[in-house]
Structure formats: structure tokens, C-alpha cells
Amino acid sequence: MYPFILERPRDVAAATRLGSADSAVYIAGGTDMMQLLTDEILHPDHLVALDGLLDARIEVTPDGTLRLGGAARMSDIADDPDVAAVFPVVAEALLLSASGQVRNMASIGGNLLQRTRCPYFRDPGVHACNKRYPGAGCAAMDGATRTLAVLGTSPHCIATSASDVAVALMALSAQVHVLGAHGERVLALDELYRLPGDTPQIETVLEPGELITSVVVPPTPAARNSSYLKVRDRVSFEFALTSAAVGLDVADGVIRAAGVAMGGVGTKPWRMPLVEEALIGRPATAQTYRDAAQHATEGAVTREGNRFKPELMKRTLVRALHVVGGRA
Ligand code: SF4
Image (cartoon, rainbow, N blue to C red; front, side, top):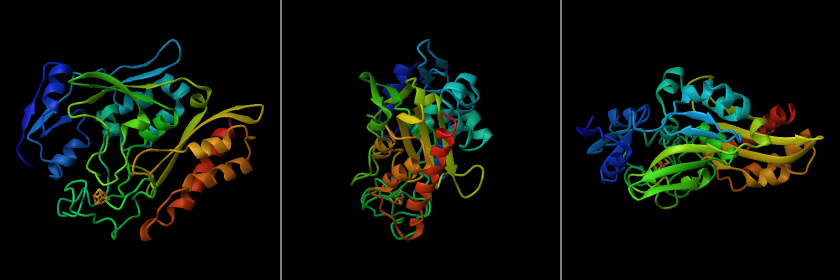
């Protein structure tokens, strides 16, 4: 591990000042950051510790809105009875993430900002990675692509977004509150993430020093009737090959509202507006689900190792729609 200075700021304002420095990174739960440091993928000069500084509360407000403090632990959110009852897709996505030990440490803010699991990005022996060394090329393009993205890719990067709960929150139109040296702002979760384009090293719209202080999820009938389905190579402690977060509001057998996002397939958590449009106003039937799922793969670009993904995406989505539509 490269040497660094550990900063322990007194409050959040001091943290954002320290975090604005060129070679500073934050550490909260540390579950991803410690791997990146010990593997020498990152070598910051300053590590800014956030423990004890950020809100860790989990609350459902009187109007039904879910509010998660940026430091709320994954395990605490997953175990919260209100989250499980009113936003089940969030609880399910968390329980299908990582391991119990990791969930006990990891914060929701850190989870949303975790780095890709692209094996070449995580291999300190690989130099050809535009995310780590801009302009160095991309070893993944002609490498092992089984776990890599088919949506939102560019000629410079095909790395998959890793977070499960980000996919669930995307389907529910969550917002993130962020704080930096110049104050607070609110972003739709979809706006937080950038596509790789020709600058894959820039993954979010956060300014230097900005951090996530809370996540807010609006209450909707579709959120209450929601679920997360994850397909992966082994049944625990594994990232998604494909996943689907689905929320449906169904009345008298007709879909009135839908929220759909997919994971394991995009360079960011991937909202599916065309699928949603194809569901709304249609009867909640197998035919509707099959028709809507055809839209999930529009724009997909595959490589040798991940040609199976578009078909698996459709099957994953149809199954998730059956689970949610069948219990409406
Ligand atoms: Fe790096 Fe992206 Fe290529 Fe992976 S896909 S090696 S993260 S540039």
C-alpha cells in the first residue's frame, strides 16, 4: 500500500474542504476503498475519514417518503421493517449484495459510489485501463467480457456499474442530496452517473469534495409493489450478470405505472423508459411482459464473451415482471 495521510476532520464542512484537494479521497465504511488501497489501484495522498460525521438515520416520513442518511449501513436498511414493507425492491437488492459482513460495514453513500469490478481495472498488473490511466487503452475490449457492460459503452470503456441497490433506487426515481464546499444540491440518481464516453475516469457529476449526505425515495404504489431479481454465476457474494428492479402499480388488471431498471448490463445503473412505456396502460399479462422486454436491449453492443446478455436480460426482466405483476 502506498503511504498516505489519514485526515480526521471535526465536521462535515471540514471534510468537504479536505476532500476538495486534488489527491484526496473519502473513506466511510471502507469496504471498497480498502480493497482499492491494498491492491494499489488508488494511491491518494490524503484519506479523509467520514466515520461519525454523516447522518446514518433511516426514516419513513409521515407522507411515506423514504430518507436514508448517507452513512446508513446496508444491513440496517435491509433489516428495517418499513423499508421491507413499503420499498421491498430496496431491501431485496441490499440482501442480494455482497456478504453479511460487508453489509454490516458499508454505507449507502459508499455503495452508490463504489468503483467498477472490471477485472482489468482491479488488476494492478494491467496498465491498459483508461479509467486508471487516461489514454492508456482498454484491456477489456479484446479480453474477458462475461461480466462487462452492453449498454452505455464507448470505444474507451465497457466497465459495468456494480451496485445492486443503485438499480433499485433508479427504478424508484430516487434523488441524492450532495454537499460540497459550495453548499448542497439535489440530483436525480440518474443524473449522478456519467457515461464513459472518452473520459471514463470521470464516473459521476460530483465536484471535487462533494459527498452524498442522503438518499430520498418518493412513495408510490409501484414502490410498494416492487422486487429485485439478480442472476449471477454463484448464489452468494457475487456481482450480477443481469438484474432487474421492477415496480408496478396494477389496478383492475391494468398497469397504471411502472418503474424498471436493470443492473449488470450498463456502464451505469440502467433505467428502462421504453420498457416502462410499453407496460403502462396494458393488461398485466405474460404477453405484455414479453412485448415490453423486447425494448430492454435496444442499443445493446455485445462482444464475444457477453453475447448471451441481451437474451438473458429479456428473460430476467420477464421473470421479474411476473413476480411483481402476479402479486398486484
Ligand atoms: Fe479500464 Fe474500463 Fe477498460 Fe475496464 S473496461 S479495462 S475499467 S477502461
